[in-house]
Amino acid sequence: MLVTCVHVVVKSEHIEDFKKASILNHQQSVHETGNRRFDVLQSKDDPTCFLLYEAYESTEAAAAHKMTDHYLNWRETVAEWMAEPRKAVGYQSVAPE
Image (cartoon, rainbow, N blue to C red):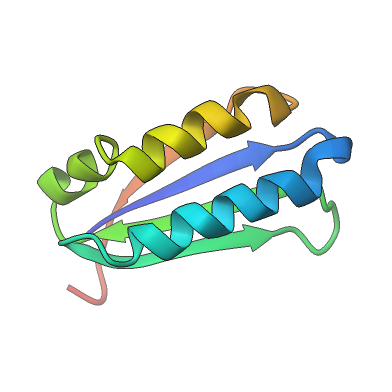
């Protein structure tokens, strides 16, 4: 299983817009072939900080996600709302296998 944690800092005036767009992306991503989990998390300490937790069965499934209309729409929609470029960190699952 391949996991990607995407760290996003959003401009404060766009927090609610970002949440709505990300929830829509989540709702469609969880139905993708190979998707194991897709969470949208918001920091309790700083409401401008978000973490997208994406788990896919394979590298191919994760790559396919980035070709979907809903992802491409999300990426374009939220681009101007970010206070800084998003940062993706990839992980390989140790447990569960």
